[in-house]
Image (cartoon, rainbow, N blue to C red; front, side, top):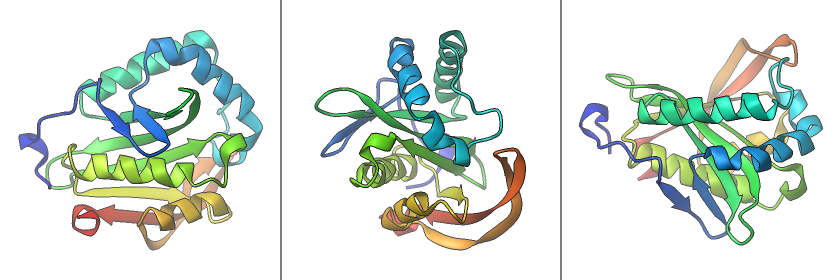
Length: 193
């Protein structure tokens, strides 16, 4: 399904259930749990994050969540908290950012998972749900991900979620303080149907 302008936008109360997870928009009530998750995963996420990626303060995180909710309503970015369906604990996040409508109908995919649950297939499960959401109800045609070549776990997630590799982008993003090459992956609506 494609079409951008003629697609009804999903509300902020949208939930994406999977076998083991629930993906949903963050709420300001999530800030303490999200803050703890970011602090507990700071070392795990640091090699894959921009230089300034230190765990934010609760005030800053509240502002981020408020901005993410506004971006959702404005059809610019869809951030989804990944929570454990049994405990409700925040175990990760998936973002569909840089949404462009019109002839492009595309978004950029980013994701992270708690270091304590790596290797259990949870991130793949979450990314599949986010892709189905993006290429279904959101009406996007294409979702793209940029992954550092040495980020083997993220490369595995992309492959298992059905994204195909398109090539290498030289000095694509500034990560950990320097411009680094990224492998580019993508999927289109025709490939997920």
